[in-house]
Image: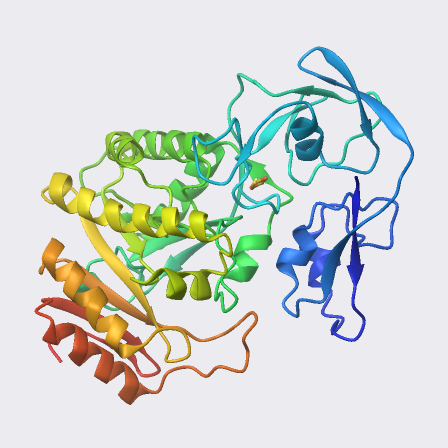
Length: 405
Ligand code: FES
């Protein structure tokens, strides 16, 4: 059955984010255009949108891989594909249609629609539409925000973070498989979806940015940049081709949740030189609380995969790849006891690995929680350093605290 978005006007604060940014048709709920994709509901900072099932007697005909099928009108391509037997998955390899962000940001679910690559999760079916689910075409993905960075990311070495001026350039991919209620990059996740780029187009823009900011480091972040594997691998290969000098560094900033060993091997082979992995937590309940991933089985897979990714990189690529680990801290989200346990576990993997604690402050939902005080972050620094980790950095209201505190 089709769904439609319904706004709860008691909760809605008329910020316009649902219509102007999240919705592909720009008309949430009250329009004939609503396909019930749910992107607005995931994006609304005030949780003011619900998806409700509607009765709709009309069917239309579409063609999927050469077969004509009848589907209800006002549904997404993704739903139509599910109706004709495709299996949707949120962890790679568990189905034939990987739909990790569900908001039109990552284009992992892209199929050819009337000859044009489109994200199936937010594209509406139309009478006579022709869908090809096995396109042999160059992947595309929305990427935006090329800019110079003065402090870099989780995978930027501390000795560089201390220097003045720009130290790397960064760009941001749309779409994330987490729904962190307190996300600090939520506009990056949803904004800029209109223009999807090929890996080569994105690599050219990044190479230009490198020249403009006169830096050697080029970071890709998000959203979650690893979601569209084919796109990311081709992007890194192309970027390396355009920046063949030995000073060039290719930094991937990620939540690590789908980085299986074969994916990590492929990233290294494609040119990745630096990686920052945000681990979020040690405990599953904390992870679900921080990331908003409600499906416990999926959350467990994400959490374990991220931890395993850290160990795999350390065990197999410590000579070749710089790795930094990110951990969040806010007393409303994770306890100091768990922070200590996270530190202990990282130390058993490698006491030398760089650990950067991010002082989580709400910018999306959970606006009631406060940014940690400077003293709280000093305490976290002491706890982690006390576990034996040698390179602990904490982000604070007064700037970074480094290993030499
Ligand atoms: S799952 Fe469809 S665009 Fe990300």
